[in-house]
Image 1: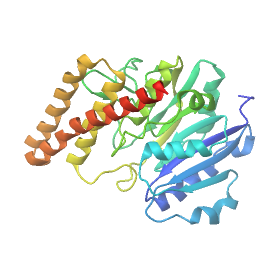
Image 2: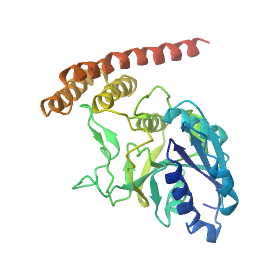
Image 3: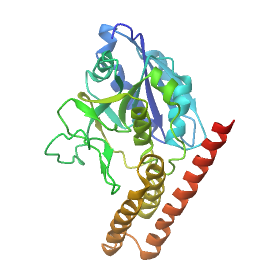
Length: 309
């Protein structure tokens, strides 16, 4: 950890000014300010409707520096990329804006990079009202996705282990990873679901491993408004279908795509039967598959064009 001089803590935010200020106060109380093992810069990429000026007014009260960037486009992957283009640290840690970091959060991320094979660290996420029970810590499913489109976000694991992916609101990467793997894929739109899993799969294809460290723990408050929230369940389904289609065509064997599509479609239809939304809304949400195909075609053609040049 001695070669790590500066850590960049990246916070995308959207219409959560008061929540953001609470998080900055939380960061200010972490013990890293006392032992000074490494410097810290906090990079805020604000996609809010109105520019948040209070950050500048309070900047002098923190032991860390703040870089604040306001952008108009609302997109989590794009916000991550803007932050990365402004980051100066040796390690990049990504968190949500509605979280509480536990005392040794920063050190628990940074110390895992003493292993040169570790390209990224997945942290533990506690959600008091949304904890999924997990009987065993299974490396093949922790923060992974199976051939039926089922996502395994192990939030409550207690065993340090190698995993397939990381939670979007609590992970870190080396600076060298960004330089090698590149930017986050902005095509994961709407809820942005699977954008972090896409990056994890790309990272692993480059030969790096991802370490799950339960010591790098935070509490996710799940603030109901702002962030990547969408206004309706069928809209959420639309983007689930779209993003899953894009992800499967990029990273999984195409033979499994019908299984994934059938599984997600059945899940949506079950919600119609439970009267969570209408059948017409369900039919609209199914268009996410078609839109996902078009998005992948755009991605594929763009890559082929860049390879030919």
